[in-house]
Length: 285
Image (cartoon, rainbow, N blue to C red; front, side, top):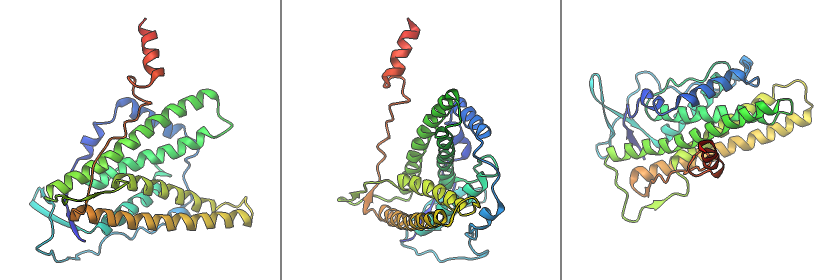
């Protein structure tokens, strides 16, 4: 089923305002201090297909009975029609291209609207992945491990917060389109935001498996194991992408209903984590 997405949902400036100054400083410090993020070989970047842009000048007919996401631009109202397949294809392309780019520069977010939210969530998975590499290294000091652990907690909290913002963005889009769930609409066990998060992690896993194939210090048995795991990851990526396409189509048709329940993480909440609120009482005393 084809649907129309509203352009310009939320600006990156508004999203940036939701991040604390401490989290930004930790992210920047962890990025520059992390020795596991060198500039990668150009061969890796060349191995990723970036030909995802639509053909210039291509136009498609808009069926009159389809729901429309109406937006405003500087030139006036704009209507953009995108199929669920196109949404998922764009998300996968974003994940793939940014993972390659971010291994040679600081993470950025040049996207807008839904993709801007997806990119921000993807950044925290990227930072988490490399901080966890450092945490498992036997060569780092206990003080560095403590610093990395705190960074991991912050990134993981932000990762889950932005999963919810992906779902909130989709809820806004469905509401603006006038989509109402059917009386007996079903609820999916996983939200679209959670599926996007899994696709984000899978893109990182695929990238690093492909990186393993470039090593010259391993034997053929290692290469063969990596190839088998890489093939399994790519199959899982395809299956998960298809499932997300079906979920978005069901949501747009009202066959399923989307709810945001909140992750309710307790470990970073000073009122719920006993080590934090007990420490606060001792300090006050």
